[in-house]
Image 1 (cartoon, rainbow, N blue to C red):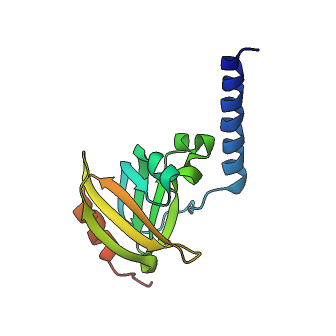
Image 2: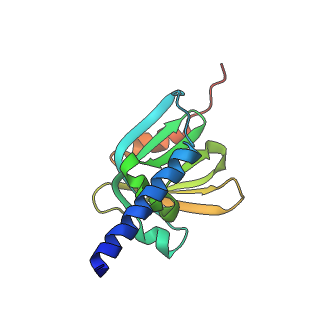
Image 3: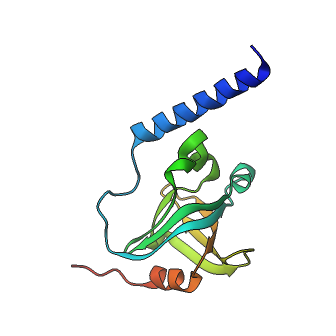
Length: 148
């Protein structure tokens, strides 16, 4: 077989195995909608976890949601191919109390924001987002939790 055919087979197997992995693992995000304070589709994003995650930035491939208690950063379904959410570090469900800083940052096409937080394992993380309306996003993050 030619090298090109082997490459196609390996890429195909990588795609299938990653889709199977995420189908078995299930979603980190609830199926029922909590009270959503802000949501945006087609956002930009880049994690600063390591060189690989910086290289795997997402351009117009993220859905950003702020609920009363959490910030959700997740890719569109098509982005789950080839383990990209794991490589890019762009799938997070972050309690608001874990967010340590939110600051403006330059971005080419949108309003840039850097979100710093501590993950569930106590590691400090930093993600840059390119949003249509950073002010509404920051206001939603500042809002208090309402107990019912």
